[in-house]
Amino acid sequence: MFRAAVRLSVSGARSLTRPQLGLTAPLAQRCYAHGGKLESDEEFDARWVTYFNKADIDAWELRKGMNTLIGYDLVPEPKILEAALRACRRLNDLASAIRILEAVKDKSGPHKKIYPYLIQELRPTLDELGISTPEELGMD
Amino acid sequence: MLATRALSLVGKRAISTSICLRGGHGVAKVDDYNPLPDVQFVTELSAVQKSLKEKEKGSWATLSNEEKIALYRISFKQSFAEMNEGTKEWKSVIAGMFFFIGMTGLVVLWQRKFVYGPVPPTFESEWKEKEVQRMLDMRINPVEGFSAKWDYENKEWKK
Image 1 (cartoon, rainbow over the protein chains, first blue to last red):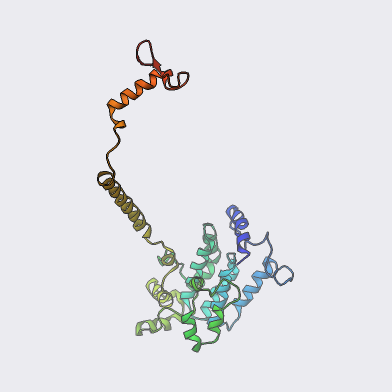
Image 2 (spheres, one colour):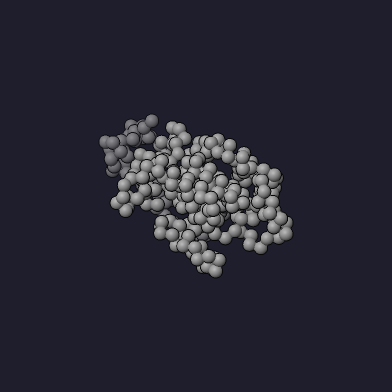
């Protein structure tokens, strides 16, 4: 959260040019506080995809994961969101799936191009699982 | 936080979500921002809702939009759109401002009538005329200022 102040200003410029996700690339990644090595974007994404892909993920883990992920100063990559949506499916939780979509839209803040890009990337998954977007349900 | 403590019966893990060390979550207001709160909104499901929950276990594509919205409403009190919308409070604020400015205006008018005494005689036009004449006679600021603007030949202000 403390890194957020620095990140937002730079990431803002990047995302205006094209929908860039995982906007933290140019700056320091996680775990500087522990003196460990930098984690790259790919490693970060892979870690989260693995987290949500756990076959027997439970509801608490889903909530905890999502809440933590939303707490970061970035908009998650479509592949992380796809894994999260599939986790919702395994947990028979449509409400959370819709909530996740709302949350990432909210997370994009003023960068309006991010959300449509995400939906476009997630469209196959949304259709496969039968998840409606908040817009389709008229909830915006 | 209170709800979380009350729910410690449900699972000890529920508490640790709130007391997360990440320094952002779990602190009073920020708790509201967790997109997936611990407790679903409707805890006691009606029969209709229960059957809907059963239906949720099947393919979601078979659910109608109303059913999806109903499922959402079971879990969450407000959608993001509802949560983020502003209040109309600003209108009351502006109205209040104008009201008090108006009240102040009335007070000022009343003061002028009932509190302040009469204005000194030096403000009367007769007095003022004599004052101006005296100033011209004394040649007040004859170069750039007052008397410089007076035409002494024609006894009028310069055009």
